[in-house]
Length: 113
Length: 115
Image (cartoon, rainbow over all chains, first blue to last red; front, top):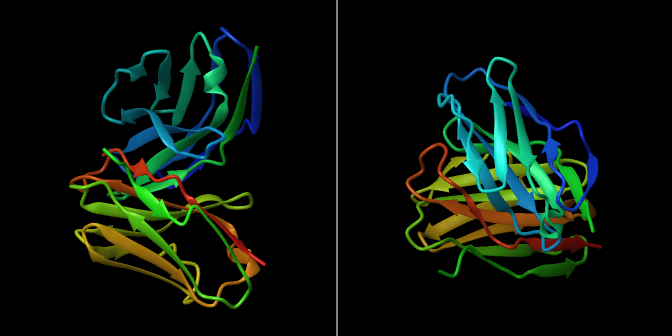
């Protein structure tokens, strides 16, 4: 992806609720990969989920799933049954060219007890 | 598995000094990436290597920045001379096979403060 945009600087939900983080991207490539990374206060970057553009099925990893809308160039992350440990910055990212990761601005997610 | 190792974790230096950040990728990974994270610009790729060879350094901000990878298990990012605007968190990441979509594993980062 050449540009990645996250329009929600901050979000806050109660524990056990479901939350959706938005991401849009722009690319001229036919096949590409999209990612969601989590950065907790420890600042470690952790891969949450990955989607390959030519796969129509949305990726799922336990409580994390994506809604990939290729025509709309939208790639949102849904977190079900949110937990306190999900509190973190979340970055949407896309691969540009062969390997370059391009990141969005991030969404600061807070899970409240 | 030790993961990607970066040193130092924190560095405070004065403007004009040389700064060297170090990275040890995960054993067996053949791609290495240097990123910079700031509040203003977010996460940016500075440079990446495949099989110890620099592939794309278009993200390196100025000639004051240089990166080397003398072997498969070690890389450095050097800033000389450093300036206050270089203050940021610098991440190193590695991946295997250099294929698009392969997960990049990030190190813990080095927080650099230039006074």
